[in-house]
Image (tube, rainbow, N blue to C red; front, top):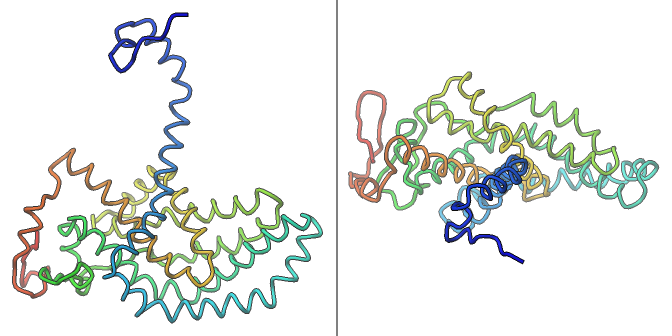
Length: 313
């Protein structure tokens, strides 16, 4: 039986007819395979953010100083909900879904209710500043100081990227406070009452909204208008859905939800570093080690108000 030409030696390409047949055969699969690849890559960034955060001890004070007390408060919120709301909802779901499905959906339902309460009371007011700091520090660690510098005071000779960060000179939000997002969480919570696919639908719908807001800080740093932000979110909507879905799953974990908010912001920044790297190689040049070595300036802030200018890069 004759063997196929060796593609590694150019055999397939040397046979135009066979090459065309193979291209024709695999063409219907290229689109789905590409979408799976893009989805898996975007979904991996929240997980990579956890690993990245843990490998950078300079991030720990941001969590311990600002978010540890809120994590204790979130524990109390979930404790109250699981004490008083879990059993009634479990019994109600068991009527329609059976024992196994009811347990899973009841747990996710209560976690979602807790997430609504915590997000409405605390996240929009206490957490966003910490997320901005982690996001900006991650960009600085990857040589993107020139992206951050025009928008906040920087101390170029500080020992770590977190300590480099001064006060923002322009509006700084990791995610804008979205009443619509909270309303959607409430409206779509009943999806968990639907057997089997209801919980998955809830996570993906709410995750899609969260994912589309995950690069808001990057858009701010680039100075995009609302119309330009909307266009970018539309372009990356497939990837944002999967990034946001994994982020939502992490944030439904009791007590650790605030920790995962920070690691997710690091993951979002890691995604930005890849996009910026490709963009700079294509249209300009990447930031080099020499650029970072040029930060040999006195330990004083970088101003961008027309009084003092000293680009650390």
